[in-house]
Length: 477
Image (tube, rainbow, N blue to C red):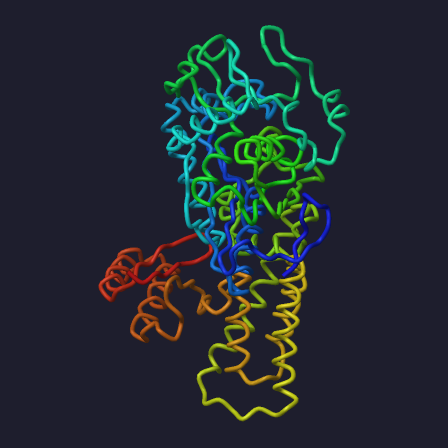
């Protein structure tokens, strides 16, 4: 398997430190506002990477942080805390804001069929670990204490510029000068611990530390939590391309300064989702949520399909027209797969050498595409070829089921106009199928009383049904 490594700026063969185990850390959400579909692209691509690793036989431990303190409006340690800003905007406490938007984040990812991480870790649950790491950096003389904060001293770490590939002197000149009242030694030094003084005297979230009452900086959390769960050296660390200049170099510096070991072996960075050729972001107020997609009648998995039509290292411009085309493509592919499914329960045939060769070719081409730096547009093309091919339906179904373990489009679970979760179509009893179809007819006729009665019967049969803008969803309970 080969992946593009931002650290070396080339595609390299991926071999984990302790095969078949893989440690994978993905930068999570700062939970002060709604998750948008730009985030959805990044986390879908993380999901694809994880699925490909699993498909290749690896045992993946996937750790993802939740930033619920310390991330300021500017990545350069300037402005107010984003959680405090979110609390003022909503009229809620910072804890309520963090809880609400964390739930929204993972609910959004669920709709995109993104696997939940093995470990989800909140910054506020790991203050002890962050304090311990800062202590180590101070003891090793990589950090210094000032009246307003504890800073990391980048002049003490010789490899600071290796990720962003820029001369450190040049990098220094592109940043603002040290603010009046701060005690930084150089502009690129970054905060490890904010003290509850000055502009942060009223900061709501705060903890006792050896340096006084305060709260951690944004960067320290990822190092402390990733090392707790994955050890001093991680196989894979992912993030958006906006993390290359500041956040990830800071992670490298503080982690390697503390341990003396390489922090990450493969850095994977995802390109932005654009809208009108501009980055989709909260600060520009030009973003759409998954709910906005659903309210316009689109299936969220059409959005996942759209993401897969472009390589993760290329920016993708979003339009409602492109989403409409993606949904049309997904529905056509599902229709073909539905026909495959309905004819795939016959006895298997003895295959000719020609058909055996075709099946082998499809499988190898799919595997080659996913293992060559995640060439997802190519994998979609192979899936389409299989769906349209003349190989027998049982073998076609097996290939599609295997491919969909990576694609995550639920190609064989979208039948008869409703979606199944935790159960395949063949496992669904005929009696339940008839109840669902009758209920759909009742809802079409606006017979809500009958619809509710049928819902209760479906539940008694062991299945929960939930209505959505893209049709009912059925789940085994």
